Every structure is written in structure tokens, then in C-alpha cells.
Amino acid sequence: MAYSEEIEARINKLVSGWKYTEAKKMFGGVCHLLNRNMFCGVHKDSLILRLGEELSKSAMELPFVKPFDMTGRPMKGWVMVESGGFKTDDELNAWLEKARGFAAELPPK
Image (cartoon, rainbow, N blue to C red):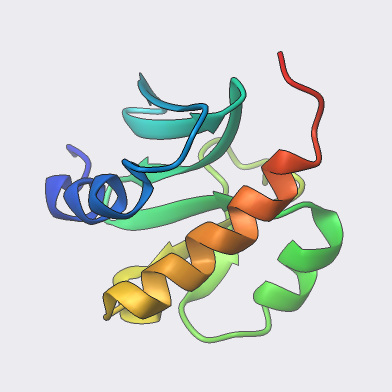
């Protein structure tokens, strides 16, 4: 299954003005990097976010959020958010800002 180009376009619209970001095809979709560290992307019809272990645990208590798992082994610190969890650009931006905040604390690659 291809990734949602609609979700990707919405992400691009919000992060295109951010410094030190780039998009890269990965995981059968597209990921966005900040200082060469992945912070978000699109996998099939879901938003994937790198939030770190603490924030991802609390995020998974919310509706539409589940662990990011492509292989049967969830990626620690990552979550998948179904489209119902970011219906508006404000909701999407809030998720992206959380992931951006985590990635900004990582050393540049």
C-alpha cells in the first residue's frame, strides 16, 4: 500500500519553513528529518512521530494513537497517529511541534 500523499502534503505545508529540515523516502513512505534526525513521517494512512519514550507513553493513552510497529517489534519512542487524531492543521501542527521538540534535543548527525 502506498503512503498517503494527502498527509504528506499537509506536513510539507507546515514544516516547509522550518530550518534544518529535509524529507526522505523511507519505510515505504516519507520521513522528515531535523538536523538529519527523523522526527515524523507518513506510513500508509498514518502519521508517524518520534516523541521519545516518555512522551510516546502518554500519547498512547489518546484516541487514534498506537505504537509504531512495522515488523512485530514496536519502535521505542515512536507512535503512529491515525488521521482521526489530526483532522485540522492545528492538531497536526501540535503533533509535529512535539516531535520537533524531541528531535531538536538530539545531537545533529
